[in-house]
Length: 329
Image (cartoon, rainbow, N blue to C red; front, top):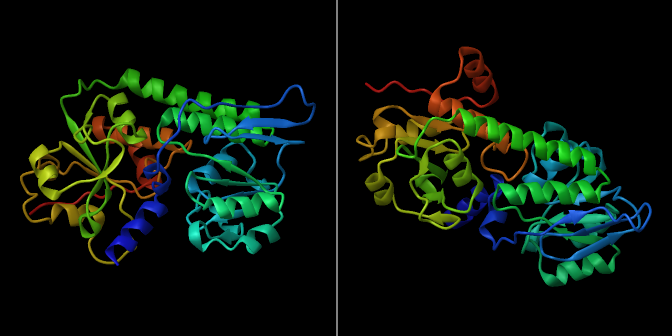
């Protein structure tokens, strides 16, 4: 039961795809030789050619759904994965299951040109059945920020939205550059990213992940940078490493203690610097946990949390993603 809950948490946060082996260094481009046609290399290294930009898409991962809306192609989605929940209008798109629970007939009935999925999301047999039905399967698999740029560029080419995709990428790069330039940290302070809470077994973000990259960008050190990718850790390891900041992405549904309150109440954690100084940030809207354009928003929120934003910035941040503040007796 706990394993299933953990799996649900990771999928809902858009992190399950990142636990699979990532592929980097791949490119995507529109096919200039075939007028009106599109040719891309997906993030599995597979060459995909279409006679024209895709018009009907099923996207199984939350991050890819966000990319479609960011480049102005959200209206082309005819099906979405279970955990695709941003922006709000995506909830009006028909939901389809992925993995072993996928109903192939249900997907075929949506008549998509393309199904976009993460690596290992479907079996080879399922992929073959989809392609036999005339549906092109495209793999999108971003593990780090560069991978997000690749995914945006690839999806932009797929939809004939190269220019808009380039604008989104440039906007992210500009935001990251500005935050990096303003950050004054020298890497001596540490941050612990909690991507799965103690109740279900602690998981964190290690090296070669976008969370680790953003921490470095902002002048703080990920205290689990010795972990490769997304990994399970122990409570004792967190206590020993004594982080100055804790960022949790645990969801709160209005029952029981909030995620921040739960961390503050953990037995034995009272001497952790982040707990003593109430330096705990709860981000519930996936800005920092999905490999999508909103990583730039997440980086802004983390910057304000570490360095303190202006009063106006803090009010905006609170409206977007409330970070709880709890008084310790």
